[in-house]
Length: 103
Image 1 (cartoon, one colour):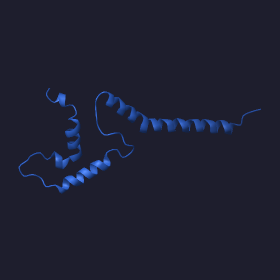
Image 2 (tube, rainbow, N blue to C red; image 1 turned 45 degrees about the horizontal axis):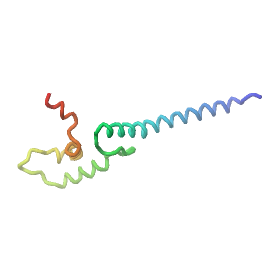
Image 3 (tube, rainbow, N blue to C red; image 1 turned 135 degrees about the vertical axis):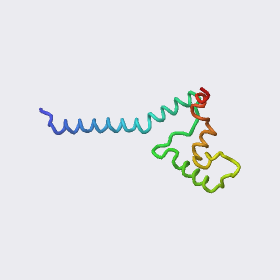
Image 4 (cartoon, rainbow, N blue to C red; image 1 turned 135 degrees about the horizontal axis):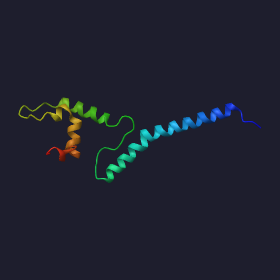
């Protein structure tokens, strides 16, 4: 009894579709969560991984709040007004590569 060519083609197409879905799942969810776990084990803290939108909502809220506050005329520190999210991250979690700044 011969196996029809169409059933073999559907099986190969289904296997290829499953492989693509697995690669997508790995790229979108598994690798970022594995990296997050690895960094936490190394002692790095930060915001948890969020699928698709990440920290966008927090960025927009902080930018909106920063625009409502007046700029102090006696301060040259404008980072909290211009890039509030990055200023918040650096203040809470430390400056990236801060040990290399003194080289």
